[in-house]
Amino acid sequence: MPDYHLLPAQRLTGTVRVVFSAPPKPVTLTSPALDVMTDLRNIHAAIIGPHMTMESANAYMMQRGVRSLLVLDQDKLLCGIITATDVLGEKPLRFIQERCVKHNEILVSDIMTPLDRLEAIPVQEVQGAKVGNVIASLRDTGRQHTLVIENDVDGTPMVCGIFSLTQIEKQLGATISSMEIAKTFTEIESALIAG
Image 1 (cartoon, rainbow, N blue to C red):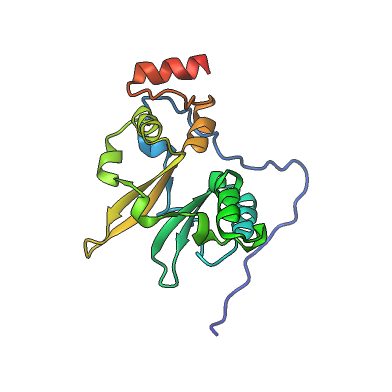
Image 2: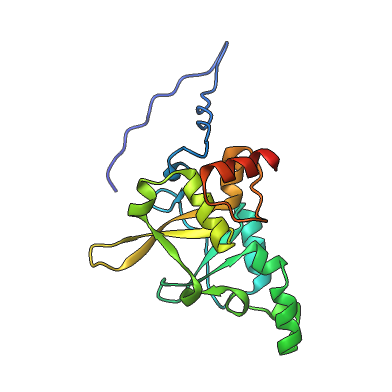
């Protein structure tokens, strides 16, 4: 191992301040969509295997402070997504009734949304879009999350980002009503003001 020199240190006395990062810039409906995208090129994706238990998926989501996990197979390829709604909603109860299994025997693969039922927005579409466009798209599909993809050098699609309605609400500082589908900025803005 090469020799490394010691870094000089100094003893602290008197007044010492701590650097605080700048607060995130406010997000509005007309802000760039990229401002509310979880960019997996900069942040590690929250992932889980399909053969893990549903309970471990829930615990991991709580630990990470997220509401969805990408489900990757043994080859690290996307095979689905599991959300807090999947875990805490009706899916587990229906699965227990249909299969006569115990709650702690339910696997991620049993209740996840499989790959063939997922949709993703190409990153090129996101680059020119606004936050309002993302909200309208999520509301139109009735989903809390949507994936963003780009092609790798071989042309294979790769998930590079995620939009989460919960995260967008936090950044907007407002609750987004999911009752009716609003597709224009005006309709979305009205729903935000009313909610």
